[in-house]
Length: 256
Image 1 (cartoon, rainbow, N blue to C red):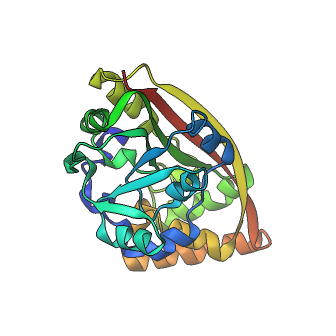
Image 2 (image 1 turned 90 degrees about the horizontal axis):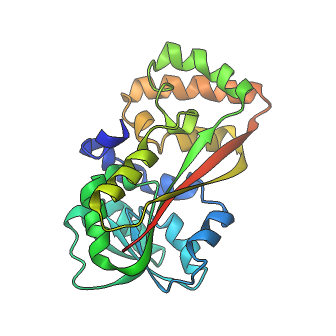
C-alpha cells in the first residue's frame, strides 16, 4: 500500500482543507529523533513535504536554517504565517536552482512522494556525505483502547482500522523508502532507527487528530460524523482521556 500512496493525489493533497487543525493537534516528534538528525550540526536543511512546519520548527530550534517544500498552498500559507520559509511545489517537480543542503528531512510525508523519483531529486541538492532523514509517527493505542474501538470501526467504518497508521498498523512505507534510496544508487545503505514516546489524549483532541488523517478525512461527512461521535463516547467511557503510545521511525542514509 505504501508504495502506491503517492499516486492517490486527492488524499495526498487533502490536508490543506484542515491546515489549522493539522497544525494545532498533530503530534510533534521526540527529542531523541531530532538529536540524531542534528548530531553533525547541519546548517542548511531542506524540509520536504513540510506541511505547516511542525518538524521544521524543531530543527530551527537547533540553529538550522530550514527551507520547506510543500505541494499544498494552503498548508504552505499557514507555515509562512508562522514564520517558516516555504516554496510551493510537488517535490518531484521542485526546482532546487542549484542550491545545496547539508540535511534533507521529510516528516510524515515521504509516502506521498514517488520513492525513487524523490530519492533522485534529494540526491541533486545534497552534497557528498550529507544525509537524508525520513520519519513518521506510527500510533500504538493501548490494547484496552483498541479493543474498545474495534467494534465501532467494524460497524461504522469497516476497513479503516485495518490500515490506519494511527490505530496501530505499521505499513510498508519505511521499507518502500529504503528500497527507493537503494534503487537510486546515490545513497549509502539506509539505516532504520525507532524511538518510542507517548502523550495523553483527551476526547476532543483525539477526535480532532483523527480528522487530520486522510483515511478518516476521505470518509463521507455523515459517516465520519457518526464515527467520531461513537469514538468520542468510547473515550469518555475511559474517563475522557488515555495515554497514546507512538513509535517514531527514522530512515536515514548518506549521499555518496
